[in-house]
Structure formats: structure tokens, C-alpha cells
Length: 220
Image 1: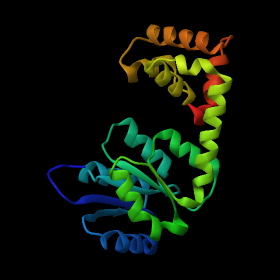
Image 2 (image 1 turned 60 degrees about the vertical axis):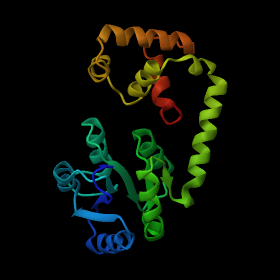
Image 3 (image 1 turned 45 degrees about the vertical axis):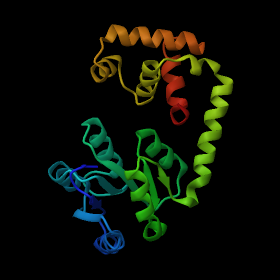
């Protein structure tokens, strides 16, 4: 958050104006929280975020023009300094895991948004994750799968921080060249990292590493 101001600036993007109005009222009833803009589609939200630079963007996952996922991915790829809280109607574990894999800190069910939204904003602005309590089982499942993977694949603990980044990027279907560009290293260096990761994980074959990364994306 901008240290020059005390207020937390927030953008709400949702294509239901009545829902936006209610959410805004709840948010602005709290001292220091200020909604600086609303948008009814993802493309408009992106432009407003670029212009206004809010601290937090509250994004409906399903929006016209650009989904919340596509918008968040664009924000992260362009290193636009805004924290994201997703709103969703769906209690779908695969969608939850996809959001967590992206690095989204807040995940709030619309059914409980009125009671959860202020707490989620305060948590996220403090650098903490916030997930609607009804979804706590998803977090437990995620944690259990991660522990199981590390038990079954002890070589994961031997990976360097850069190797972990490369593995996560492979899980996003990125090529060696794309990874090289993002990490500011050469494609040859990426290929060396891939070889080292495969050796540490005991993987053999040209596609084994990519297959492993994609299958275990949520646990990496």
C-alpha cells in the first residue's frame, strides 16, 4: 500500500450493479477503506487499475470481456502492484486451486461476501491469505496433497529456489524460451535447470518433467 496515504484504495469489478452497490456499502462502512472505482467487465477493470493504481482489486471470476482469471494473470504478468481478491459463486476445488496456483491471496464466496469482504481486505493488505471459511476443507486437502508429494518425492526438497520457479513455470506450459525471458537467463541455462530437476526427481524421458509439473501443479 502507498505509504503516503492512510486509506486503502479498492476497485470492485463485477457485472451485477446491485451486488457491487451492496459490497461498496459494506466496504466503505469501515474506516480507511475507500472504493475508488467500479467496473462491470474485466477489460474496463484493467484500464481502471492501470490508471488509478488501487491497493486491492476485488474481481468476480466470471465477467464479460475478460474473466477474473485472465485479468489477474495479466496483472501478475505485467507486474502491476495490486493485490487480488476473487469473488465466486462456485465451491469448485479445481477453481480454488487454480486461483491459489496463480498467487491470488483472497478467495471469497459471493454467498458470504457481505460478512467476509472486510476481513479479506484487511488480511490481504497485511500480506496474509484469506479464504472463505466454507472452503477450509480445500486448504486442508491442498496441504495434505503437498505433504504426500514430498513424502513420495523427497528430491523436491533438494531443488534450488530457481529450480522450483522453473518447475512451476513448466506447470503453466511455458517453453524454455519463455522461462528464460522471464528469469533473465539463457534458454541453455533453463535446459540445464530442467536436466538437474529431472535428475533430482528421478524422472526419465523427454516429456516426464512436463508431465510431472502439470500433474502436481497445485502441490508445488
